[in-house]
Amino acid sequence: MLQNIRTKKDLQLGIGCGIGVLFGFLLQKGGVTDYNVIIGQLLLTDFTVVKIMLSAMVTGMIGVYLLRGLGLATLHPKPGSFGSIVIGGLLFGVGFGLLGYCPGTLAGAVGQGALDALLGGVVGILIGAGLFAQLFSELDKTILNRGYFGEITWPELFKVNPWGVILPVTVGVLFLLYWIEVSGL
Image (cartoon, rainbow, N blue to C red; front, side, top):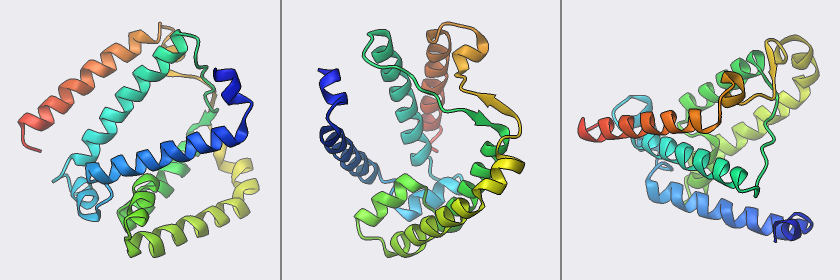
């Protein structure tokens, strides 16, 4: 069945579009497409975003490794470097701090009609992507590949079975989520 999906690009695009719409719907239902919720997170007064992101991270981590264990998925980690992480983090952080949306919540906010997300966010992403494309060759030579660490995952880094990372992280996240709930954050 999965081989059939891999050979049909239109089917892949349809599945991707459907998953994207579902993702946006869930972001909107979770409340994280609301500017005030995101600003509340940045001000550490509303932890809705953290709760949703940590829940998604644990669900995705377990799901991917279950599928991998069953032979239904393979991992293709992208190579990385500290230079690219620093530049990406700075750009993401500045955009997030200035506008109050990350790319996912921005798309959801545009979908529900937020003009600030459309005019500020989409225009900002297009300008930023254009500038990055223009500067890429110079950045690639000077900054982006500094501290190159390749295509490594945490389990590979620690030389342990993936579940040796997944289980403690999951338990830690569950305790953190519980603490956030009982402390009223």
